[in-house]
Image 1 (cartoon, rainbow, N blue to C red):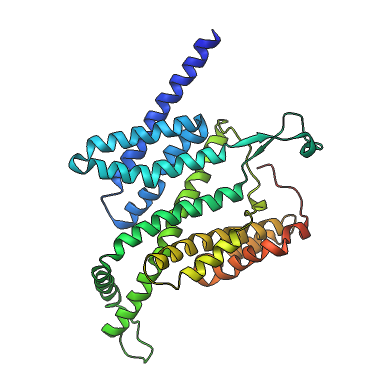
Image 2: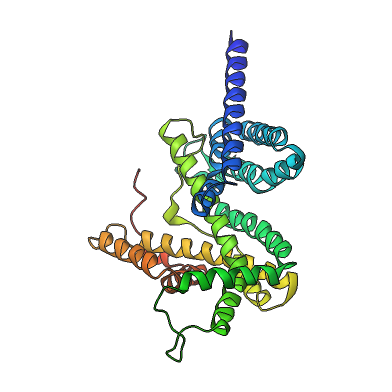
Length: 338
C-alpha cells in the first residue's frame, strides 16, 4: 500500500510537471508575437511554471517540465525547432532548474551550531546567495546576447536613431543650446543607450528571474507545497567576494570588445543586486518604527519616479553594509511571521 501511494505521488508529480512544462513552452512561443511590452512580459514570466514545478514537486519535476517544454518547441517550431528549443533550455529551463535546486538545498544543523534549535533543524541555502547566483545567470546570457548583437552594431545604432527620431519628433525636447535636437544629438543619445544595453538586458533578465522565483515561492507556500521555510528577506547577506566581483565588473565595463560587454552586463546585474540589498537594510532597520510606512512608501516612490538617481544611494547602502554591518548594529526585532 505504501508503494502504491508513493507511485501515485510520483505519477502525479510527473503529470503536473509535464503540464507546467507545456504551459512554459506556450508562454515562450507567445512572447515572439504581439506588442513589444507584452512580449517582454511574457518572456520574463516564462520561468514561472518551471519554478512552480521545481519548488513544489522537486528538482526532478522541474527538469521534466523543462525537457517537456523544449520537446514541444522542437515539434512546433519546424526548421527552427532546434534553435528555439535550445534558446528555451538555456534562457529559461536551466536557470529555473538551478534556482529550484539551490532554493531547496539544505543540510542538518550540527550539534555545535544547534544551540536552542530542535534536533531535526536544518540549514537552508541562504537567500542572499540565491540573489548572487541569479545575477550571474542573468549576466552571462546578457553578455552573450550583446556580443552577438555587437556584430551588427551599426545596424542597431541606426535603428535606435530612427526610433528616437520618431519618438522625439512630436515633443518639445531641445538640445543643450536651446534649439531642436539635431541628428548629431540623436546619434549621441543612441550611442549612450546602446552602451547601456548590456546592463539593461542583465537587469531585466535578473528582475524577471527573481520575480518569478518569489512569486512561485509565494504560490507554493500558500498551497502548503513549499518544502523550505520562507526566508527573512530583510536579513539578506551576500557571500564574501561579491564586492570584489562588483568592483572588477566596474573596471571591466570601461574596456572595449567582449570584455567590456561582459563587464557592463555583470555591472548591471550586481548593481541591481546591491539595490536589493540596500532595500533589505532599510526594511530591517525600520522594523518596529512608527515611521516605517512613510519611509518605505517614500523610498519606493523615489525609486519609481527617479529610478536611476534614487537607486544609486540605495545601492551604496547595500554596498557599504558589507563592511559596516548596519543590521548587526540595529539589532531590530525578529522577522514577522508573514
